Amino acid sequence: MTTNAFLGINTSFERLEGSVWTSIAEVNSIGGIEVTRDTVEATTLDSEGGYREYIAGLRDGGSPSLNMNFTAEGYDLLKSDIESDAAVSYRVVLPDDVYSFTFSAFVTALSLGEVVPDDRVQADCTFKITGIIDTPSV
Image: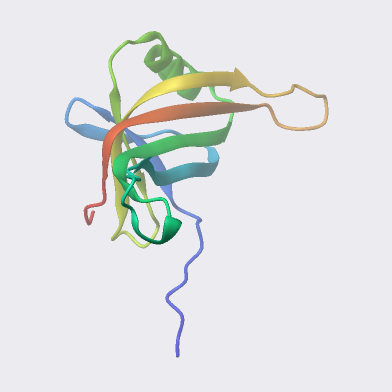
């Protein structure tokens, strides 16, 4: 059987500006797109067999993060997002040009990485997804 695996190179992290998706430049890694679901205990006195019972609770889209090479343009763009009280639309487009993750989020953290004489300057950004993650074909 032949694998359908592919490398992450050419994946893009994009921000919606008006009706145009713009890539955030020089992203090194994207992590944390993880949908989780709460459970709510619903055990009653007549639950069978001495086992707890649960019902499905609310879902959470997670807290994606970016590591990127510092650029003034990218940092300033994300700084404007953390300063805003409005959610912004973002998407991750995988390099197969078929699958993407589109979501609204707030920037919750933006930091300049450690600055040392013998390595590139980097920045990190964390988001909090609000609402559903859409996974349309590109």
